[in-house]
Length: 158
Image (cartoon, rainbow, N blue to C red; front, side, top):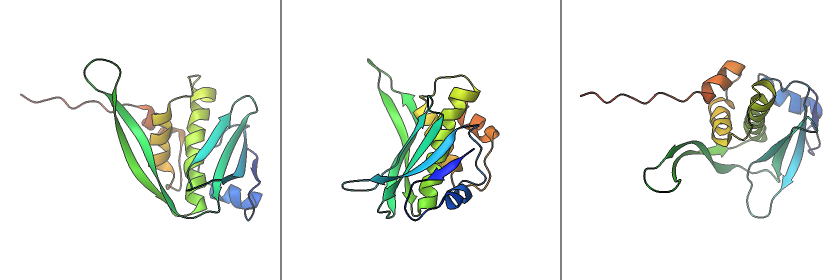
């Protein structure tokens, strides 16, 4: 897997070291690019299946920020399609945390599409995987499979 950095102040080797311990995305190229923002830093990345590339964008200038991450949804009763969203606010204090979170999220899209042959638009599953794993030193495909499983509902006792 080729990892390339187009970010000022981060070499290819530094980008590679940042992603150590995370699963490999086959023969896809990983590109780290700057994200210029107007008012506040935020998360941005994409998985380009046709080009076989994962693009991770780091806010420039970087300053610590918080981002809400939606990791689950449950359908509400009643007419129409309405959901109750479960989210967590995540603090990103370093570029390293942003890169690892974004890579985990985009890797999960890659895993769904390339390895499992499923549609890759499972945003809550990808966020759940990234949220659970981006700060861990080692992450495996078993962790991805765990993020895809729905927890069984608890049975009400009579």
